Length: 51
Image (cartoon, rainbow, N blue to C red; front, top):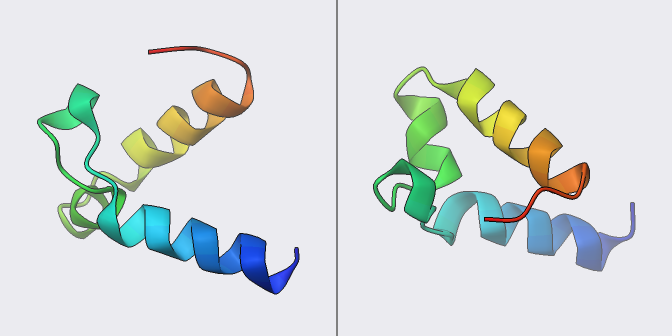
């Protein structure tokens, strides 16, 4: 993974509010013990699902 990609991923994880999850960020969801929700969300996006 290139540094730019890593930086973008970190920025997304810490700052992107997710509408499907009451606009919580992935970081907040993980801190709430909902890491699997974030993993499932990323997998659905990677699989081509659209919101």
